Structures are given as C-alpha cells and as structure tokens.
Amino acid sequence: MTYPAASIIMSKISRKDFIHISGLSLSGTLIGFQTIYLEGNKGQNNNTTIQEIINLMTEAIEGEPLRRTVDTLKIGDPSQRCTGIVSTFLATADIIQKTADLGANFIITHEPTFYNHLDEVDWLEGDKVYQFKRELLEKNNITVWRYHDYWHRHKPDGILQGFLESIGWEKYLKITRRNTGICNVPKISLKNLAGYFKETLNLKRPFIIGNPNQECTKIGLLPGSWGPRSQMGMLRDDDIEVLVVGEVAEWETSEYVRDAAYAGMKKGLIILGHAPSEAPGMEYLVGWLKPKLPGIPIYYENTTDAFIPV
Image (cartoon, rainbow, N blue to C red):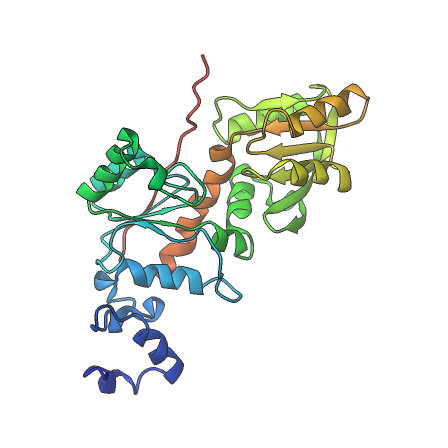
C-alpha cells in the first residue's frame, strides 16, 4: 500500500526515516508525518501523539530495543494527541486526579500502576480498588506508560542521576555500575548522615541500622528495591561503610547489617523508602524531556511516601 503524502515528504527525509514513519501507521492510516522527528519540528508539536512520544523516548536510549521489558502501555489510547505529560514515580489515584486537573492526558510512571511488577490485572477482576482506579483513568481519557528499564539504561542512569542531584552529591561520586553508585564523602556519623537525607529529601521516616555514632566516608547508593544479594554484595565486595537503599525485606539485608555491627564491623544501613529514593529521578526526567518536546506541557508530580509516622 502507498500513501499519497509519501511523495511530498520523501525529499526531506531519508529512506531509513521513512521506513520508521511507515511503521507507525494505525488501521491503514499514516499518522503524524510532521511530528515523527519532534526535535526537528519544534513549531508543530501541537499534533504530537502519545505513541510518537513513546517512540522518541525509547529511541533516545542507546543500544538495541529491549526485547523483554516492563516499559509497556498500561492503559489508554496512544494514538490520541498529547495534551500534556505528567512524570511521576507512581501513578497513584491522587496523581491521576492531578493529571486530569492539569488538562494532561499522558502519565509516565517509573513503577507499576496495578500493584504488581508486570501490571497483570486478571487476578484483579471484580476488585473494587482496581475498578475505581481504572474508571478514574478511563473517565479522564488518560494513558499510562511505564518508563523503567529504558530510564535505568540511560547514560547516566536517570534515576541515580536525579537522586545525586537532589542531594548535591555529584561531586562525591566515584564509581557507577548500572543504577548503583559509590561516593566518598567528608567524614560523618551514621546518625547525622541519615539526618542529612531526611532534610534534603524532606523525608518522614528514614531508618538506620548499625552504630549511630559510626563515622563513615565510603557510601554505597542503591536507590529503589534491589534485593538482598545485590545489597549485601555491595556491602561486602566494595567495602562500603554505609549502604543507602530504598527498601529492604526486613529479614534479609537489615539482619545482615545488624549482625555485622554486633560483630564490630564498620557497617551501617540507611533505609529511605522506595518512593523517596527514586522519585527524584522522575523529576530529572522532566528536564531531560522538555527540550525534546517544545510546546507540550510537561509536569512533575511527586509521589509522597505512603507510610505515615504516628
């Protein structure tokens, strides 16, 4: 099948680009000729579809497309024109309502929308909480897409970079591997270090394990939820004095550090909470994305900590 508009634009784009554009046709209709290359068409973004934005964000990351990824559409119609974007750590019900109030129709979330890693919903059929959330999204015509694997693949890692900038530690970073970092900081006690995170990240409830008065300089950063082998491995293999994490299973890494401290080893753990440790990376996303999509409103909405100290 040929498209009438093809001959008009072929003189302006390469064969490779045209093949890419052709692959975006929906139901036999070619969409968005003028906005496929959004950075090169800065005055025409008012007709940009959500799918074109998704394509741009995945193609902006170096390397081959990921064959297995959780970065998939969760709900909504990607062929619709994007009226605004909200970047957030989690598409909670209140974030969805804020998105609607802003007049936006596209949420980019870092973590799942429907309470499990793969966003499987078969087991939620008939569940009143799931139904409420789904209806809130459908009523407001909001599309949700997850940007997790690709954003961690970005160089520098999008989540780690946002975290470093939020605490002012870019100058202390010595080593990075995937979305982990090792920082050498001026000497500080474990307790005061936790207090620094509490203040800079506006936290309700950082926890520490270990000797509160232990002085430390070599800090390992593992924002988010990594699991015990990665967490304990970093403490052991990199000779980290204090490991900073998003969350732990309370019978794994936390107990490893408690036993290490009891044995007189210089080991400490700071638990920030999953959302507080990774949300800054989704705020960093806004600054990265805005130059690529001039003319489209892009907002950051913070996902607050779900836990309430009493």
